Image (cartoon, rainbow, N blue to C red):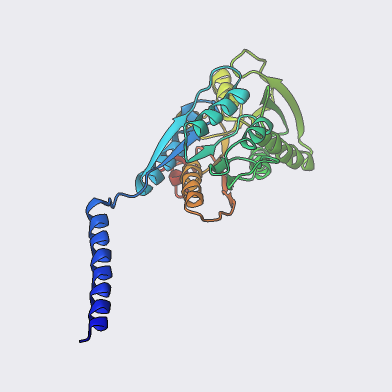
Length: 304
């Protein structure tokens, strides 16, 4: 081997040894631990009991994918602006993503327009106009209203009073439109009143009572004590107990567990660079007769 060949050989050997040493150094100090994402879940302030199955779905997804989840369920001050302030606080604290259940869609959309582009966002509820949201997880609110109307029709009701809370959100408004449209098609008289579920209000005389929000549904069940046919929304422990006891005639529900699970999965996928499609959940009507039969029991009492 000539002098030039020897120099080339030893030069190549030195490069290979340097590369091998660098690789060994990296392996010695590198960690195989996966990244832990920090995701905040901002509920709508209605209380944790209304979102028990949703939280269960979020926690199940978090355990499977090693996500650090923080729940915010109550806000100080006016709920709509307070939720936007809480959202801002989460991204300023460098949360990687958020799952949102809107209190006030207009205010929340404006707040999201100020959010950093790196923040992964999933919204459980109707579309927020003008907001950059990676994925929506929602049922069809109008369809939920129609299904509740079908339950009222099937029970032979001839008239009803619909109770909406002051400041009812977009989802409740869409449910109302679906409900009333279907009832009017069948010539069922429908009166709408706006009240505060935490205050005393007059119950209808000889008419079915309808609520399109979980808090209002629970308030009607408590006040009527089974004296009225109450049709409502939601699947909290108390509402399911009221359904079983006959204080509620029917409840329009979605799989809150699926909403929570899919909401967190969507945020994780966005953080890993995957484009997401919006998800539309099925809606159902639960009654005392079907609540413990398959598949309704799995929707109302998910394990996780």
